[in-house]
Length: 122
Image (tube, rainbow, N blue to C red; front, side):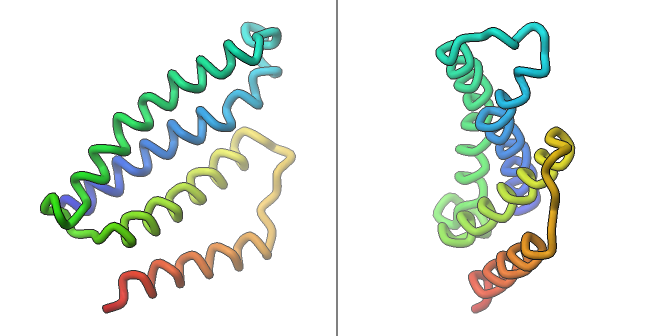
């Protein structure tokens, strides 16, 4: 179950981080935020990123072998990167209608899945 909890926490943390990093790009479409200064946008993003860290740190501790988890440090990093890209693609396709997902993107994801396979291979 530690692996499931680790992955769920990583998905949630990446959702917050994607919102912190890229969500502000949609602010221009919202009346309340159209004229915010860059300093205000940075502070809002930091506030969102705080939740990312509140989920990311426990996920890594829960999943790391030296704390009783099932994953090595390299495995945690690869899982993190794949989750990051999956969350980002979903985010960009849902919120940024001008973005497209093409064959070269799919091929890149296949290579990432292969990376996960080889990192986990004994």
